Length: 142
Image (cartoon, rainbow, N blue to C red; front, side, top):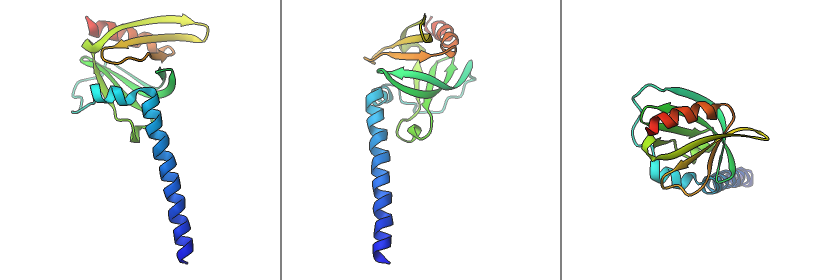
């Protein structure tokens, strides 16, 4: 009886360490840890969204991730999907901190590349949502 309980406990412990370790590693590889220290969302956003996009494919530091994106008058809100949202909090990047947003069409579709103040890596938003985001971000920056 005791050995069965111990085995179940060990299984949950191994699963927890694997899940937590991989989540923390992904947070580091994408650069989300750097973004969350710079632009952590400390209060709730009380304004109305100018655009809402779910399951948007992004590449942050060349690591693919799927995020939810909301465009607000004061900035760009990003939140990764579950289960990554357990380890990676939502962030709000002020429009004034987005230095440049440019869109380009490549072999595999449209991409929008953002340059964010204080963030060293590339931040690419893939797909058609990137075009609308580019227009909104460029209007935020002005």
